Image (cartoon, rainbow, N blue to C red; front, side, top):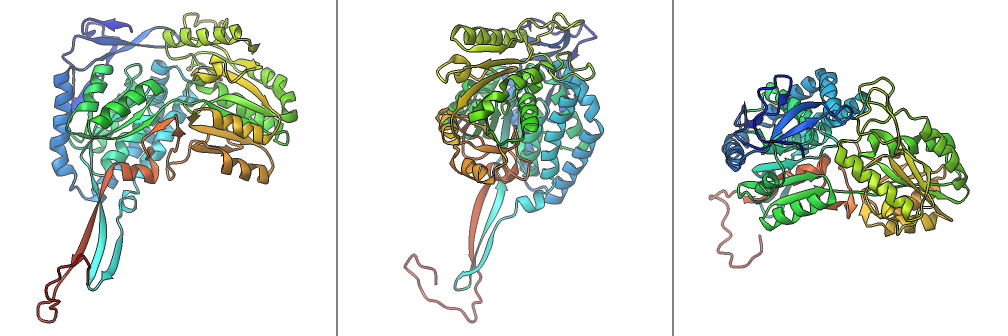
Length: 510
Protein backbone atom coordinates (compact mmCIF):
# COMPACT_ATOMS: atom_id res chain seq x y z
CA UNK A 1 0.00 0.00 0.00
CA UNK A 2 3.05 2.32 0.00
CA UNK A 3 2.40 3.24 3.62
CA UNK A 4 4.80 5.77 5.08
CA UNK A 5 5.28 5.71 8.85
CA UNK A 6 5.99 9.38 9.30
CA UNK A 7 4.76 12.71 8.00
CA UNK A 8 6.47 13.40 4.64
CA UNK A 9 6.73 17.16 5.10
CA UNK A 10 10.52 17.10 4.83
CA UNK A 11 10.16 16.37 1.11
CA UNK A 12 9.11 19.74 -0.26
CA UNK A 13 8.28 18.33 -3.72
CA UNK A 14 5.54 16.08 -2.33
CA UNK A 15 2.07 17.54 -1.79
CA UNK A 16 0.31 16.58 1.40
CA UNK A 17 -3.44 16.09 1.34
CA UNK A 18 -5.02 18.13 4.12
CA UNK A 19 -8.07 17.44 6.20
CA UNK A 20 -10.89 19.98 6.13
CA UNK A 21 -12.48 20.38 9.54
CA UNK A 22 -14.76 23.26 10.51
CA UNK A 23 -13.60 25.45 7.64
CA UNK A 24 -9.87 24.92 8.22
CA UNK A 25 -7.43 22.90 6.10
CA UNK A 26 -5.30 21.14 8.69
CA UNK A 27 -2.48 18.60 8.80
CA UNK A 28 -3.49 15.27 10.26
CA UNK A 29 -1.85 14.13 13.48
CA UNK A 30 -1.86 10.54 12.26
CA UNK A 31 1.22 8.35 12.02
CA UNK A 32 -0.16 6.45 9.01
CA UNK A 33 0.37 7.87 5.53
CA UNK A 34 0.01 6.57 2.00
CA UNK A 35 1.98 7.65 -1.05
CA UNK A 36 0.04 9.00 -4.03
CA UNK A 37 1.80 7.54 -7.06
CA UNK A 38 1.71 8.64 -10.70
CA UNK A 39 0.56 5.48 -12.54
CA UNK A 40 2.59 6.34 -15.65
CA UNK A 41 5.93 6.97 -13.93
CA UNK A 42 5.73 5.57 -10.37
CA UNK A 43 6.77 9.02 -9.16
CA UNK A 44 5.41 9.90 -5.72
CA UNK A 45 3.34 13.04 -6.34
CA UNK A 46 1.76 13.35 -2.93
CA UNK A 47 0.98 11.79 0.39
CA UNK A 48 -2.38 11.25 2.09
CA UNK A 49 -3.01 10.74 5.81
CA UNK A 50 -5.26 8.09 7.30
CA UNK A 51 -7.20 10.27 9.73
CA UNK A 52 -7.42 9.45 13.41
CA UNK A 53 -10.74 8.70 15.05
CA UNK A 54 -10.51 12.00 16.92
CA UNK A 55 -10.23 13.79 13.58
CA UNK A 56 -13.20 11.93 12.12
CA UNK A 57 -15.26 12.77 15.18
CA UNK A 58 -14.18 16.41 14.99
CA UNK A 59 -15.29 16.60 11.34
CA UNK A 60 -18.71 15.13 12.17
CA UNK A 61 -19.07 17.42 15.19
CA UNK A 62 -18.29 20.45 13.01
CA UNK A 63 -20.91 19.32 10.50
CA UNK A 64 -23.48 18.74 13.23
CA UNK A 65 -22.90 22.20 14.67
CA UNK A 66 -23.03 23.90 11.27
CA UNK A 67 -26.30 22.15 10.41
CA UNK A 68 -28.15 24.12 13.04
CA UNK A 69 -27.73 27.34 11.05
CA UNK A 70 -27.16 26.03 7.51
CA UNK A 71 -30.52 24.21 7.47
CA UNK A 72 -32.35 27.56 7.71
CA UNK A 73 -30.16 29.37 5.17
CA UNK A 74 -32.45 30.68 2.41
CA UNK A 75 -32.69 28.76 -0.85
CA UNK A 76 -31.51 31.78 -2.77
CA UNK A 77 -28.29 31.96 -0.76
CA UNK A 78 -27.58 28.27 -1.33
CA UNK A 79 -28.36 28.62 -5.04
CA UNK A 80 -26.03 31.60 -5.50
CA UNK A 81 -23.25 29.71 -3.71
CA UNK A 82 -23.58 26.92 -6.27
CA UNK A 83 -23.55 29.44 -9.11
CA UNK A 84 -20.26 30.79 -7.78
CA UNK A 85 -18.86 27.31 -7.29
CA UNK A 86 -19.66 26.15 -10.82
CA UNK A 87 -18.01 29.27 -12.20
CA UNK A 88 -14.83 28.59 -10.22
CA UNK A 89 -14.75 24.95 -11.31
CA UNK A 90 -15.12 25.99 -14.94
CA UNK A 91 -12.30 28.52 -14.63
CA UNK A 92 -9.96 25.96 -13.05
CA UNK A 93 -10.92 22.92 -15.07
CA UNK A 94 -7.64 22.52 -16.97
CA UNK A 95 -5.51 22.98 -13.84
CA UNK A 96 -7.46 20.35 -11.91
CA UNK A 97 -7.33 18.01 -14.92
CA UNK A 98 -3.53 18.09 -14.84
CA UNK A 99 -3.54 17.10 -11.18
CA UNK A 100 -6.09 14.37 -11.88
CA UNK A 101 -4.01 12.89 -14.70
CA UNK A 102 -0.85 12.93 -12.59
CA UNK A 103 -2.43 10.96 -9.74
CA UNK A 104 -5.01 8.80 -11.55
CA UNK A 105 -3.46 8.23 -14.99
CA UNK A 106 -6.33 8.98 -17.37
CA UNK A 107 -5.75 11.18 -20.39
CA UNK A 108 -6.00 14.94 -20.05
CA UNK A 109 -9.02 14.98 -22.32
CA UNK A 110 -10.74 12.33 -20.21
CA UNK A 111 -9.76 14.14 -17.02
CA UNK A 112 -11.44 17.29 -18.31
CA UNK A 113 -14.47 15.17 -19.17
CA UNK A 114 -14.43 13.76 -15.63
CA UNK A 115 -14.63 17.29 -14.24
CA UNK A 116 -17.22 18.43 -16.77
CA UNK A 117 -19.67 15.61 -16.03
CA UNK A 118 -19.45 16.54 -12.35
CA UNK A 119 -19.85 20.20 -13.22
CA UNK A 120 -23.16 19.37 -14.89
CA UNK A 121 -24.45 18.18 -11.50
CA UNK A 122 -23.31 21.42 -9.85
CA UNK A 123 -25.19 23.33 -12.55
CA UNK A 124 -28.29 21.27 -11.85
CA UNK A 125 -27.92 22.03 -8.13
CA UNK A 126 -28.39 25.69 -9.03
CA UNK A 127 -32.06 24.80 -9.70
CA UNK A 128 -32.65 23.93 -6.06
CA UNK A 129 -35.42 26.51 -5.64
CA UNK A 130 -37.66 24.34 -7.84
CA UNK A 131 -36.11 20.93 -7.08
CA UNK A 132 -36.90 21.17 -3.36
CA UNK A 133 -40.50 22.28 -3.69
CA UNK A 134 -43.21 20.46 -1.77
CA UNK A 135 -46.86 19.88 -2.71
CA UNK A 136 -50.08 21.65 -1.70
CA UNK A 137 -53.73 20.71 -1.86
CA UNK A 138 -56.46 23.10 -0.75
CA UNK A 139 -59.72 21.95 0.88
CA UNK A 140 -58.90 18.27 1.26
CA UNK A 141 -61.74 18.43 3.81
CA UNK A 142 -63.94 21.28 5.00
CA UNK A 143 -61.58 24.22 5.45
CA UNK A 144 -58.59 21.84 5.64
CA UNK A 145 -55.41 22.22 3.57
CA UNK A 146 -52.58 19.68 3.31
CA UNK A 147 -49.06 20.41 2.16
CA UNK A 148 -45.62 18.82 2.26
CA UNK A 149 -42.24 20.30 3.11
CA UNK A 150 -38.94 18.88 1.86
CA UNK A 151 -36.50 19.50 4.69
CA UNK A 152 -32.80 18.61 5.05
CA UNK A 153 -31.98 15.55 7.14
CA UNK A 154 -28.72 16.54 8.83
CA UNK A 155 -25.11 15.40 8.51
CA UNK A 156 -24.52 13.33 5.36
CA UNK A 157 -21.38 11.58 4.16
CA UNK A 158 -19.85 10.44 0.88
CA UNK A 159 -17.29 7.75 0.09
CA UNK A 160 -15.83 8.02 -3.41
CA UNK A 161 -13.72 5.73 -5.67
CA UNK A 162 -10.40 6.24 -7.46
CA UNK A 163 -11.68 6.13 -11.03
CA UNK A 164 -13.57 9.46 -11.04
CA UNK A 165 -11.97 11.66 -8.37
CA UNK A 166 -13.72 14.77 -9.71
CA UNK A 167 -17.07 13.65 -11.08
CA UNK A 168 -18.25 11.48 -8.22
CA UNK A 169 -17.45 13.88 -5.35
CA UNK A 170 -19.32 16.47 -7.42
CA UNK A 171 -22.27 14.08 -7.59
CA UNK A 172 -22.36 14.08 -3.81
CA UNK A 173 -21.53 17.13 -1.75
CA UNK A 174 -23.05 19.88 -3.96
CA UNK A 175 -26.50 18.27 -4.00
CA UNK A 176 -26.34 17.41 -0.31
CA UNK A 177 -25.39 20.86 0.90
CA UNK A 178 -27.62 22.77 -1.51
CA UNK A 179 -30.54 20.86 0.05
CA UNK A 180 -29.55 22.31 3.43
CA UNK A 181 -27.51 19.41 4.81
CA UNK A 182 -23.91 19.41 5.97
CA UNK A 183 -21.38 16.91 4.62
CA UNK A 184 -18.35 14.78 5.47
CA UNK A 185 -16.46 13.57 2.38
CA UNK A 186 -13.97 10.70 2.30
CA UNK A 187 -12.19 10.72 -1.07
CA UNK A 188 -10.31 7.76 -2.46
CA UNK A 189 -6.97 7.42 -0.72
CA UNK A 190 -5.37 6.60 -4.10
CA UNK A 191 -5.95 9.99 -5.76
CA UNK A 192 -7.38 12.65 -3.41
CA UNK A 193 -5.45 15.69 -4.64
CA UNK A 194 -7.80 16.66 -7.47
CA UNK A 195 -10.77 16.14 -5.14
CA UNK A 196 -9.15 18.51 -2.65
CA UNK A 197 -8.68 21.15 -5.34
CA UNK A 198 -12.43 21.05 -5.94
CA UNK A 199 -13.06 21.29 -2.19
CA UNK A 200 -10.80 24.35 -2.01
CA UNK A 201 -12.93 25.99 -4.70
CA UNK A 202 -16.09 25.19 -2.75
CA UNK A 203 -14.65 26.99 0.28
CA UNK A 204 -13.60 29.90 -1.95
CA UNK A 205 -17.17 30.03 -3.30
CA UNK A 206 -18.40 30.66 0.22
CA UNK A 207 -19.35 27.32 1.78
CA UNK A 208 -19.50 28.19 5.50
CA UNK A 209 -17.27 26.56 8.11
CA UNK A 210 -18.44 23.06 8.99
CA UNK A 211 -20.88 22.70 6.11
CA UNK A 212 -18.30 20.70 4.11
CA UNK A 213 -15.61 18.61 5.82
CA UNK A 214 -13.06 16.13 4.47
CA UNK A 215 -11.32 13.18 6.09
CA UNK A 216 -9.01 10.68 4.44
CA UNK A 217 -8.38 7.02 5.20
CA UNK A 218 -9.20 3.39 4.62
CA UNK A 219 -11.50 0.83 6.19
CA UNK A 220 -11.23 2.20 9.72
CA UNK A 221 -12.44 5.63 8.60
CA UNK A 222 -15.16 4.11 6.42
CA UNK A 223 -16.44 2.06 9.34
CA UNK A 224 -16.39 5.11 11.60
CA UNK A 225 -18.55 6.98 9.09
CA UNK A 226 -20.95 4.03 8.79
CA UNK A 227 -21.44 3.77 12.55
CA UNK A 228 -21.31 7.40 13.72
CA UNK A 229 -24.63 8.25 15.39
CA UNK A 230 -24.73 11.82 14.04
CA UNK A 231 -24.47 10.83 10.36
CA UNK A 232 -27.91 10.39 8.81
CA UNK A 233 -27.18 9.35 5.21
CA UNK A 234 -24.27 7.91 3.23
CA UNK A 235 -23.65 7.92 -0.51
CA UNK A 236 -21.14 5.37 -1.82
CA UNK A 237 -19.66 4.61 -5.24
CA UNK A 238 -17.11 1.84 -5.64
CA UNK A 239 -16.59 -1.91 -5.69
CA UNK A 240 -19.30 -4.45 -4.94
CA UNK A 241 -17.45 -5.88 -1.95
CA UNK A 242 -16.94 -2.53 -0.21
CA UNK A 243 -20.34 -1.20 -1.27
CA UNK A 244 -22.12 -4.18 0.21
CA UNK A 245 -20.18 -3.76 3.45
CA UNK A 246 -21.02 -0.05 3.62
CA UNK A 247 -24.70 -0.65 2.88
CA UNK A 248 -25.08 -3.40 5.47
CA UNK A 249 -23.10 -1.72 8.25
CA UNK A 250 -24.61 1.74 7.78
CA UNK A 251 -28.15 0.37 7.42
CA UNK A 252 -27.74 -1.56 10.65
CA UNK A 253 -26.94 1.78 12.28
CA UNK A 254 -30.12 3.40 11.00
CA UNK A 255 -28.76 5.41 8.09
CA UNK A 256 -30.08 6.01 4.62
CA UNK A 257 -27.63 4.50 2.15
CA UNK A 258 -27.24 4.60 -1.61
CA UNK A 259 -24.53 2.22 -2.76
CA UNK A 260 -23.54 2.21 -6.43
CA UNK A 261 -21.31 -0.76 -7.08
CA UNK A 262 -19.77 -3.03 -9.70
CA UNK A 263 -20.94 -3.90 -13.18
CA UNK A 264 -20.61 -6.13 -16.18
CA UNK A 265 -22.01 -3.97 -18.95
CA UNK A 266 -23.03 -5.53 -22.25
CA UNK A 267 -23.40 -3.98 -25.68
CA UNK A 268 -25.71 -5.89 -28.02
CA UNK A 269 -24.98 -5.46 -31.73
CA UNK A 270 -27.63 -6.26 -34.33
CA UNK A 271 -26.67 -6.87 -37.98
CA UNK A 272 -28.57 -3.77 -39.14
CA UNK A 273 -26.50 -1.41 -36.97
CA UNK A 274 -24.31 1.25 -38.54
CA UNK A 275 -21.04 -0.68 -38.59
CA UNK A 276 -18.58 2.22 -38.43
CA UNK A 277 -20.36 3.98 -35.59
CA UNK A 278 -20.81 0.74 -33.69
CA UNK A 279 -17.18 -0.36 -33.92
CA UNK A 280 -15.98 3.10 -32.90
CA UNK A 281 -18.38 3.08 -29.96
CA UNK A 282 -17.27 -0.37 -28.78
CA UNK A 283 -13.59 0.54 -28.95
CA UNK A 284 -14.12 3.82 -27.13
CA UNK A 285 -16.38 2.42 -24.42
CA UNK A 286 -14.33 -0.75 -23.93
CA UNK A 287 -10.87 0.75 -23.74
CA UNK A 288 -11.32 4.42 -22.82
CA UNK A 289 -10.07 5.29 -19.32
CA UNK A 290 -8.20 1.95 -19.54
CA UNK A 291 -11.54 0.27 -18.86
CA UNK A 292 -11.69 1.74 -15.36
CA UNK A 293 -15.30 2.89 -15.53
CA UNK A 294 -18.25 1.28 -13.81
CA UNK A 295 -20.12 2.00 -17.05
CA UNK A 296 -17.43 0.67 -19.41
CA UNK A 297 -18.53 -1.80 -22.06
CA UNK A 298 -16.91 -5.04 -21.00
CA UNK A 299 -18.96 -7.55 -23.04
CA UNK A 300 -19.90 -7.18 -26.71
CA UNK A 301 -22.77 -9.45 -27.79
CA UNK A 302 -22.73 -9.88 -31.57
CA UNK A 303 -26.07 -11.10 -32.86
CA UNK A 304 -26.31 -13.19 -36.02
CA UNK A 305 -24.27 -11.95 -38.97
CA UNK A 306 -22.77 -9.08 -37.00
CA UNK A 307 -20.22 -11.59 -35.65
CA UNK A 308 -18.37 -11.11 -38.92
CA UNK A 309 -17.39 -7.61 -37.70
CA UNK A 310 -15.19 -8.93 -34.90
CA UNK A 311 -11.92 -8.93 -36.94
CA UNK A 312 -12.53 -5.27 -37.81
CA UNK A 313 -13.08 -4.49 -34.13
CA UNK A 314 -9.73 -6.08 -33.34
CA UNK A 315 -8.02 -4.01 -36.02
CA UNK A 316 -9.65 -0.83 -34.72
CA UNK A 317 -8.48 -1.57 -31.18
CA UNK A 318 -4.92 -2.02 -32.47
CA UNK A 319 -4.91 1.60 -33.67
CA UNK A 320 -5.51 3.03 -30.19
CA UNK A 321 -2.46 4.82 -28.78
CA UNK A 322 -1.33 3.66 -25.35
CA UNK A 323 0.75 6.25 -23.53
CA UNK A 324 0.94 8.46 -20.47
CA UNK A 325 -2.15 10.59 -20.01
CA UNK A 326 -0.24 13.84 -20.43
CA UNK A 327 1.08 12.89 -23.87
CA UNK A 328 -0.79 14.25 -26.93
CA UNK A 329 -3.25 12.01 -28.76
CA UNK A 330 -3.19 9.31 -26.10
CA UNK A 331 -6.24 7.03 -26.20
CA UNK A 332 -5.46 4.63 -23.36
CA UNK A 333 -3.50 5.59 -20.26
CA UNK A 334 -2.19 3.35 -17.47
CA UNK A 335 -4.30 1.57 -14.90
CA UNK A 336 -4.23 3.15 -11.47
CA UNK A 337 -1.70 0.98 -9.63
CA UNK A 338 0.70 -1.93 -9.87
CA UNK A 339 -1.73 -4.02 -7.84
CA UNK A 340 -4.51 -3.25 -10.32
CA UNK A 341 -2.24 -4.20 -13.22
CA UNK A 342 -1.31 -7.52 -11.61
CA UNK A 343 -4.96 -8.29 -10.93
CA UNK A 344 -5.95 -7.58 -14.54
CA UNK A 345 -3.03 -9.59 -15.93
CA UNK A 346 -4.05 -12.49 -13.69
CA UNK A 347 -7.58 -12.44 -15.09
CA UNK A 348 -6.30 -12.31 -18.66
CA UNK A 349 -4.16 -15.35 -17.92
CA UNK A 350 -7.15 -17.10 -16.41
CA UNK A 351 -9.19 -16.36 -19.53
CA UNK A 352 -6.56 -18.10 -21.66
CA UNK A 353 -6.40 -21.04 -19.25
CA UNK A 354 -10.20 -21.44 -19.30
CA UNK A 355 -10.30 -21.69 -23.09
CA UNK A 356 -11.21 -18.26 -24.43
CA UNK A 357 -9.42 -17.09 -27.57
CA UNK A 358 -7.11 -14.12 -27.05
CA UNK A 359 -7.75 -12.24 -30.28
CA UNK A 360 -5.77 -9.19 -29.13
CA UNK A 361 -3.16 -9.42 -26.36
CA UNK A 362 -2.28 -6.18 -24.56
CA UNK A 363 -0.06 -7.69 -21.88
CA UNK A 364 3.40 -7.05 -23.27
CA UNK A 365 3.00 -3.45 -24.32
CA UNK A 366 6.07 -1.19 -24.34
CA UNK A 367 5.57 2.54 -23.79
CA UNK A 368 8.80 4.34 -24.55
CA UNK A 369 9.84 6.80 -21.87
CA UNK A 370 7.36 5.29 -19.41
CA UNK A 371 8.72 1.80 -18.98
CA UNK A 372 7.72 1.71 -15.30
CA UNK A 373 4.09 2.63 -15.99
CA UNK A 374 1.10 0.43 -15.23
CA UNK A 375 0.19 -0.06 -18.88
CA UNK A 376 -2.00 -2.72 -20.41
CA UNK A 377 -3.01 -2.40 -24.03
CA UNK A 378 -6.47 -3.08 -25.46
CA UNK A 379 -7.23 -6.78 -25.04
CA UNK A 380 -10.01 -8.73 -26.76
CA UNK A 381 -11.24 -12.23 -25.99
CA UNK A 382 -13.49 -14.17 -28.35
CA UNK A 383 -15.28 -17.49 -27.80
CA UNK A 384 -16.06 -16.41 -24.25
CA UNK A 385 -18.41 -18.61 -22.23
CA UNK A 386 -20.65 -17.19 -19.55
CA UNK A 387 -19.13 -19.63 -17.04
CA UNK A 388 -15.62 -18.19 -17.48
CA UNK A 389 -13.96 -15.96 -14.89
CA UNK A 390 -13.40 -13.16 -17.40
CA UNK A 391 -17.15 -13.03 -18.01
CA UNK A 392 -18.29 -13.35 -14.40
CA UNK A 393 -15.75 -10.92 -12.91
CA UNK A 394 -15.61 -7.16 -13.30
CA UNK A 395 -12.09 -6.88 -14.74
CA UNK A 396 -11.92 -3.07 -14.51
CA UNK A 397 -9.25 -2.88 -17.17
CA UNK A 398 -8.97 -2.52 -20.97
CA UNK A 399 -10.36 -6.01 -21.65
CA UNK A 400 -13.38 -6.70 -23.88
CA UNK A 401 -15.12 -10.06 -23.96
CA UNK A 402 -16.93 -11.06 -27.17
CA UNK A 403 -19.87 -13.45 -27.06
CA UNK A 404 -22.30 -14.43 -29.79
CA UNK A 405 -26.08 -14.84 -29.89
CA UNK A 406 -28.34 -16.12 -32.64
CA UNK A 407 -31.24 -13.71 -32.07
CA UNK A 408 -32.17 -10.56 -30.19
CA UNK A 409 -34.27 -12.68 -27.82
CA UNK A 410 -31.20 -14.80 -27.05
CA UNK A 411 -29.13 -11.68 -26.41
CA UNK A 412 -31.74 -10.21 -24.07
CA UNK A 413 -31.92 -13.49 -22.14
CA UNK A 414 -28.11 -13.61 -21.86
CA UNK A 415 -27.87 -10.07 -20.50
CA UNK A 416 -30.74 -10.60 -18.07
CA UNK A 417 -29.06 -13.72 -16.65
CA UNK A 418 -26.04 -11.70 -15.58
CA UNK A 419 -26.46 -10.60 -11.94
CA UNK A 420 -25.23 -7.05 -12.56
CA UNK A 421 -27.54 -4.29 -13.74
CA UNK A 422 -25.63 -1.05 -14.21
CA UNK A 423 -25.78 -0.34 -17.95
CA UNK A 424 -26.42 -1.91 -21.34
CA UNK A 425 -26.35 -0.74 -24.94
CA UNK A 426 -28.10 -1.79 -28.13
CA UNK A 427 -26.82 -0.92 -31.59
CA UNK A 428 -29.46 -1.06 -34.29
CA UNK A 429 -31.31 1.02 -36.85
CA UNK A 430 -34.63 -0.68 -36.07
CA UNK A 431 -37.04 1.28 -33.90
CA UNK A 432 -39.06 -1.88 -33.28
CA UNK A 433 -35.99 -3.77 -32.03
CA UNK A 434 -35.00 -0.84 -29.82
CA UNK A 435 -38.46 -0.61 -28.29
CA UNK A 436 -38.54 -4.34 -27.60
CA UNK A 437 -35.07 -4.18 -26.07
CA UNK A 438 -35.73 -1.26 -23.73
CA UNK A 439 -38.95 -2.88 -22.58
CA UNK A 440 -37.61 -6.38 -21.89
CA UNK A 441 -34.06 -5.73 -20.70
CA UNK A 442 -33.68 -5.86 -16.90
CA UNK A 443 -30.93 -3.24 -16.56
CA UNK A 444 -31.13 0.15 -14.89
CA UNK A 445 -29.58 2.29 -17.65
CA UNK A 446 -30.12 1.57 -21.33
CA UNK A 447 -28.36 3.13 -24.30
CA UNK A 448 -29.75 2.96 -27.82
CA UNK A 449 -26.75 3.49 -30.09
CA UNK A 450 -25.12 5.00 -26.98
CA UNK A 451 -22.35 2.85 -25.48
CA UNK A 452 -22.10 4.51 -22.04
CA UNK A 453 -25.65 5.57 -21.08
CA UNK A 454 -24.83 7.74 -18.06
CA UNK A 455 -27.80 10.15 -17.90
CA UNK A 456 -27.55 13.92 -17.77
CA UNK A 457 -28.19 15.31 -14.26
CA UNK A 458 -31.85 16.20 -14.81
CA UNK A 459 -32.32 12.41 -14.69
CA UNK A 460 -30.85 10.17 -12.02
CA UNK A 461 -28.21 7.46 -12.30
CA UNK A 462 -30.34 4.32 -12.08
CA UNK A 463 -28.18 1.22 -11.90
CA UNK A 464 -30.07 -1.83 -10.64
CA UNK A 465 -29.92 -5.40 -9.31
CA UNK A 466 -26.38 -6.46 -8.26
CA UNK A 467 -24.97 -3.05 -9.18
CA UNK A 468 -26.97 -1.04 -6.66
CA UNK A 469 -28.19 -1.18 -3.09
CA UNK A 470 -30.73 1.39 -1.95
CA UNK A 471 -33.73 2.63 -3.88
CA UNK A 472 -32.65 6.18 -4.76
CA UNK A 473 -29.82 7.05 -7.12
CA UNK A 474 -27.28 9.88 -7.08
CA UNK A 475 -28.10 13.27 -8.64
CA UNK A 476 -31.30 14.21 -10.47
CA UNK A 477 -34.69 14.32 -8.76
CA UNK A 478 -34.04 11.08 -6.89
CA UNK A 479 -31.11 12.49 -4.96
CA UNK A 480 -33.20 15.42 -3.73
CA UNK A 481 -35.49 12.80 -2.20
CA UNK A 482 -32.45 11.04 -0.73
CA UNK A 483 -31.06 14.17 0.90
CA UNK A 484 -34.39 15.46 2.25
CA UNK A 485 -37.21 14.20 4.44
CA UNK A 486 -40.84 14.87 3.72
CA UNK A 487 -42.95 16.52 6.40
CA UNK A 488 -46.70 16.57 5.80
CA UNK A 489 -48.76 19.34 7.39
CA UNK A 490 -52.58 19.19 7.64
CA UNK A 491 -54.03 22.53 8.74
CA UNK A 492 -57.36 24.16 9.49
CA UNK A 493 -57.79 27.78 10.54
CA UNK A 494 -60.94 28.65 12.51
CA UNK A 495 -63.00 31.79 12.60
CA UNK A 496 -64.44 31.49 16.13
CA UNK A 497 -67.34 33.81 15.33
CA UNK A 498 -68.81 31.62 12.60
CA UNK A 499 -67.44 28.08 12.98
CA UNK A 500 -68.55 25.59 15.60
CA UNK A 501 -68.46 21.95 14.52
CA UNK A 502 -68.95 20.58 18.00
CA UNK A 503 -66.96 17.69 19.42
CA UNK A 504 -65.71 15.21 16.83
CA UNK A 505 -64.82 11.81 18.37
CA UNK A 506 -64.18 10.03 15.03
CA UNK A 507 -61.08 9.89 12.86
CA UNK A 508 -62.85 11.67 10.00
CA UNK A 509 -62.14 15.23 8.99
CA UNK A 510 -65.28 17.29 8.46
